[in-house]
Image 1 (tube, one colour):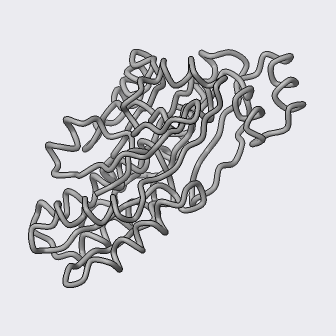
Image 2 (image 1 turned 30 degrees about the horizontal axis):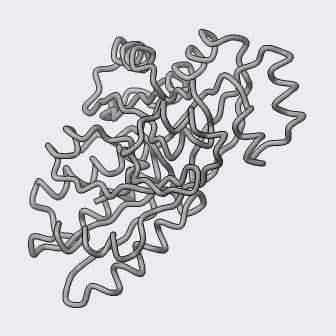
Length: 278
């Protein structure tokens, strides 16, 4: 089980037995579940004022109780550094007497979070007990990397997440910011000059890790994310798949809850390498 920041397509979540609990976006003083408004609508109405929040403990408790088949539930949340969903899930778990509910902070978001959720799902569907499902989620969470690029810092500057001067300077220089999100923190990478260069920078970040994997031939799990531009995400995934056939791959959309803060044009690539079994 996870929150809707995980970028898992609904069909993929269903196929893997994953319950996704929607987050909330408030636009113009009205609250909507993540997905009730399209990404276009959220961005168009951004001038009305918006805020975002995670599901309440009661919503998470109800979803966990419904998902439980008698062998326990693992709730995997967006990074606790980004949202209060993790703490809400802990409260929810404590309220469900007589049920086994484990809560895991994935330390990440979007497709990277989705890959952690799928790792746990594989363990659960293989018949592993709850403790082993939690362990599988934590292994993936410790290894997963997310890199993303934006055409501008304008939306982040409006929200106070970066200085306005930095956003103006990047635009004046024609730079596309590139970020890496790992271990619960975002850090800037060298910006790219132009959108094509930015996309290449994302694939290069993946290739750098691939080169370090050596001859161990670990399994690759990868996801490409987009905000209204699925073709570009497909290109990212194709560029990776041309070099290594992934064990897991999907293209997903960034959640409107996330894009409301970053603006349109967000593009990302997430992956982790699963060690080869002896």
